[in-house]
Image 1 (cartoon, one colour):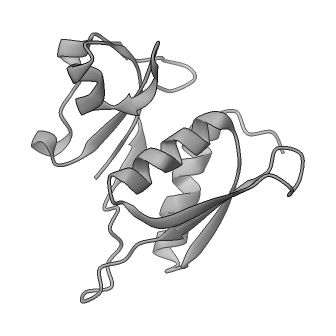
Image 2: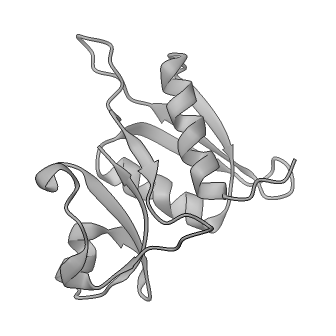
Length: 134
């Protein structure tokens, strides 16, 4: 089965794994997904991750999901795609939306690579709004 939107598939796999209370989720790898995974780790949304390049054609990303130690709720409350394959969403650096007043993260694909909304604003670069996480 060919996936038409790999980033939407990536976010859906994380969402479904959290609903099923899985500790680890495996996702087919790509360079863009690897970069998004690194951003999620840096922002504290996931526990840890590994890139398994030996598995399959493109390799696998194994993500250890993070849950609140007391309530056992997932750390990622909501994640979603902004720019879809049918309707791309681009934004200038000053017009990048703030996700729940700066508490969430908007992941942007810029000419200087994939980065968070705060990094894009500080470097004064706009780009395609990939997804949001909070």
